[in-house]
Every structure is written in structure tokens, then in C-alpha cells.
Amino acid sequence: MKTYIKDLSTQQDSVVTLQGWVQNKRESKGLIFLILRDGSGFCQCIVDLGNIGEENFASISALGQESSITLTGKVVADTRQIGGYEIHVDSVDIIQNCSDYPIANKEHGIEFLMDQRHLWLRSKRQWAIMRVRNQVIFAIHKFFQKEGFVQMDAPIFTGNACEGTTDLFETDFYGEAAYLSQSGQLYGESMAMAMGKIYTFGPTFRSEKSKTRRHLSEFWMIEPEMAFYDIFDNMDCIEDFVRFVVKEILENSKMELELLERDTAMLEKTVKPFIRLTYDDAVAIIKGEKEVDTKTTIAVLEADLVETKAQIEALKKDIAEREALIAAGGMKKGKVNFNLNTIDKNKNQIKQLEEDERNIPQWLESAKNFTYGEDFGGSDETVLTRMFDVPVMVYDWPHEIKAFYLKRNPENPRFARGVDMLAPEGYGEVVGGGERETNETLLIEKIKEHQLPMEEFEWYLDLRRFGSVPHAGFGLGLERLVAWICKLPHVRETIPFPRMYGRLKP
Ligand code: 4AD
Ligand code: MG
Image 1 (spheres, rainbow, N blue to C red):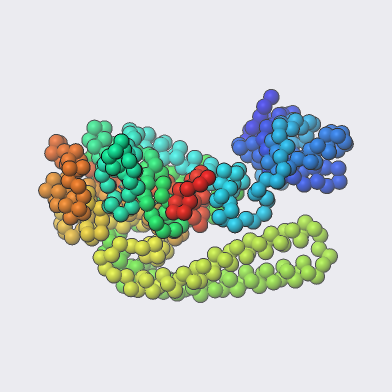
Image 2: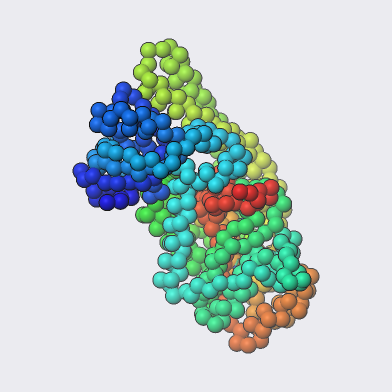
């Protein structure tokens, strides 16, 4: 019977057949320890010379990394193994023995790995990230379906810009200029008038000619749009939605988060109410003019800097001690390896801390000097979210810096009813949305102000001419959410084949 590694717990002490790839292999005194991966999991399989015969042993011993095999053996409980089980092998059928797999089980540079993305996806870390992405997508659908939203898809070829004209990808549509969609929102608004509550979930495209850790040229966006919702209903929806997804991941992706060594303490805090701040209050906090829990951003960042330096020193000391112990000799091989691994981990952590050490003074400077009326940069978001342990929603932005379609605050038309949700731990904007302008005259003014071609928006204006109602919605960037949930340094690892400035292949 063919079994998947994920199901081994139901097969204890029986003989099963597994099919997969040799992820790793080591040999010691007549035993071969294979790590088999089959897509559903990883499992140690032990081949015993005495059991399998010399000829078979030799051919298994010759298997290269990523060779494909069918293997039969007994399922034995072993709590030291990742899944809690190992296989005592009876026989192995080789499907393909391969050699010189480009990605060895050691550190590689990121550009090399990106060039090998078609193979890199097989590695344990990437496997775990993709599985979290899958669970996030599942949770997203679960949330909206249970809340009575209808999924409808917006077109990818569009005639108009939704989010400003600077980052459009232009393409040729039978001789007519067309743009790859930056956002399905305008179509989402139309569909919400037909259905009440909808969400779109599709790829969106932005030509961002800069390399940052949060920008892709092609990314997946979830865009709910709700009739009869105002900005506050919208914020309730964002909060319920993000909390639901995080909770589902904490419940269903434990093993993956563990593999990624994700400390989930911050994620667990999302059960608490999110913070809601107007732009004005957020700016006062960023600049250090307004305290949060009796502390200013300036004081918190200065303390962070001191703490960061202390952590770096402590890690350096730990490395020196371990190196001295190894150098003294007489240590068992297993212990040496353990210490070498710890040293590597510490060195990586130092690299990250040193980046903070360089960044914090810059964050401090830009926070102090933030000019009221401007949009937030990545560092402003980091500084603001540092003050809270749950996501922060900033709303009522100066209308000049926001999209043309946002409604003005009726009490103070200087502000547009946009809302950004900023994730903690330095991740920043994950959601952007708001209440939509329903006043046709104001909309026309805005379209002109943004120098957008009026004729392309005639159908959109129809939505304000026929049964116009208050409505709101938002867009969540899937890759940014996955990056935060997994605590990854860059969004490029959150999508199977990232497309970004300087990266089109493989
Ligand atoms: O804030 P944005 O530009 O908002 C919109 O597109 C609205 N039309 C959405 C709506 O109200 N229906 O983008 C929404 C989110 C951002 O918060 C971010 O998470 C993600 O999309 N995003 C990107 N993700 C990766 N790479 C990029 N270049 C991104 N640009 C935006
Ligand atoms: Mg935005």
C-alpha cells in the first residue's frame, strides 16, 4: 500500500511503501540514514546492510541527493524524529539515481538560489513557506465564504489605472494600449453593487523599479468590497479577517512555523483589539510628540539601540567560548557539530542585529524630521508599529497623497477616508483600503486632478449615477502577509516564482 509521510502516525508498526526523493544521506557502520521527502513531509529511513544485502546496500549507498525512489519498510515510532516516526527499510526501487544536484545541504548565496528557484522549492524551508502560503489562501477563502461574500474575478487587461499611472505595465491588446491590472478594486465596486459583498483574488502588477524587501512586480491581492459599509465597518472587517487568518495558521501550520523557527508570540497577540489611529495622531506618535504608554518613539528607539548592542556583545562572547571549547579538543563529534551549528546561528543573528544597529539611528532621524502631510515611508511604519504589539490601522489621510477614489471625511474634507493596516515586527503596510467617494462631482474633480483619461472612467461613474450607496473595501497583499506570518526577511520567498525588478527567470 502506498502511504504519504504525513500519514505515518496511522501506520505504526506496519509495513508501508513510500515514494519520494533522497533529501539527504549519511552512512555509518553498515547503516545508511536516508532522509526521504515525498512532498507531504520528511522522514528518516534506515537501511541496514545485514537486512538488505551487499548489492542493494551498495546501490543505495551510491544514490545522489534528489534521486527518486520507491521504498518499503516498517514504521517505527521514534520521538527524536521530526514527524515522530522512522522507517526500517526492507527494499528500495530506484526510479532515477542522479548526481551533482546544484543545491547542496549548505549555505548558498541568495542570487544563486533565486537562479535555481525551480529546484530550490524542494528545500525544507521553501517547502514550509509554500505550505503556509497555501494555508493562508485557504483561510482567506474560508473567512469570506463564511461571511457570505461572493468571489468574483476582475480582469487583468485593463484600460484604466486604479492606483496612479507611474507603475503601470503597458501591453498591446490587439493594437490598443492596455495595462496589466494594478488592482481589481474599481471592478470590485461594480460587482459589489450586484452582489452586496464580494472579494476578488488575483494577480496584480506594478512596475516598481527599485529593489526593496516588500515589493514584487507581480503579486496576489485579495480585495473585498462591501456595499453599505463605511470606513469604520471596513476597519472592523479588516481586523476580523486578519485575526481569523492568523488564528487559522497558528492552529494548522504549527509544524511549518516550527521548521521556520518562527517565534509565534507576536502572532498570538492578534487576538487583542488592533490599534486605530488617525493620520494626525500617528504622525504625532512617530515624531515623538505624543506618548504611547508614557513612552515616546525616541525613548523606545534609543533603548532598542542600547539593547541591540548588548545582544551583539553577548552573542560574540558566546561564539568565542564555543570556539575555544572546540579548539581545546577532546570533544565528541556530535557535540562539535552542535556547537558549530550554534555558532552559525549566532553569527546569522548578529548579522540581523547589526543591521538594526545601523538602521535604528536612521529611523530616529527620519522619525524626528517627518514632515506632516507626507505619506509614510517604510521606516516611519517601523517606528510607529514598534510602539504597539498588535497591527495598527491608520485612517483619515491628507487627501492629496491618497488615491482619487477615496471619500472625504464629511466633517473635515482635508482628509480622505483611506485606511492602511501596518503589521508589527517591522513589516509595515499589509492592507490598503478605504471608503469610496460617492459624490460624482467630487470624483470627476479628482479624476481630472490626477490627470486620468475621463472616458475610461465613464462606466465607473455610472456606479454613482444608478443606485449609488456608501461602500468600502480594501486590498491585502498576500505575499506581505505571508512574509510577516513566517517572519521572512524578504517577500521573494513567499511566492513560487517571484517577478521583480531584475528577476524574470526561471
Ligand atoms: O495599498 P494598495 O496600493 O491599495 C490598492 O491597490 C487598493 N485599490 C486596494 C483596495 O482598496 N481594494 O495595495 C494594497 C496592498 C498593499 O497594502 C500591499 O500589501 C500590497 O497590496 N502591495 C504589494 N505587495 C507586493 N508588492 C508590491 N509592489 C505591492 N504593492 C502593493
Ligand atoms: Mg497602499
